[in-house]
Length: 284
Image (spheres, one colour):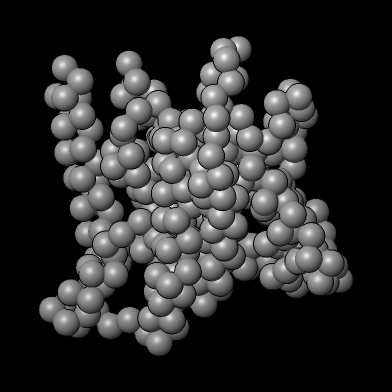
């Protein structure tokens, strides 16, 4: 069933983005970490995946429709889906950039900050601030503001562009290629400005792994949003990647989430269950 495919792809995206966001936070603790080098390598790694997929069948070009992908007659693809796809690639790159900035401002708040990208932890934090006297430091408020203004808007715009492209007959794999190529090109000026002093295998390899995880997550999102009108359900699933970050931080580093973070995670799991049940009933 198409709903099963949407759930499967969305769950994969959730796991991949959760691990990627956790590793992005880990890059800030690397000795002699260079911002331009780390972000540039991440973008370059994602872009390389787009090039690899493009080279599998270069005759199709970057933009092609679903019918072309399956050997059917070509369909017209308008300018709006193409522009939305390219803009989505830039927005996704910006989201990763702001995510790293926010983690650098407050490394102990990775889980809650990821939740801001997807939704409601800012409200939970405010309630805990006033009702439970759970005060946020200035660094934490700056981190929340950075994610709220940058990563949430950018990631949301990128996901919305996927839906626009899908409605405009653009194949899911085509959308992935275009977005990945945009990120690869955006990496060039950053890498030219980067400092390579003290760079070792870990400081180079970790961002490259983050880029591969991001590529996998982007591909999964494209597939999930192309199988049918399941946008809200898919977003509820892969938007829960903050739970993955919280679990990794707790298991690997022993960081226990605050009450606000746990409340936000619980609310998201509840919405995920309700969305899944609703769609299952509709399909039945």
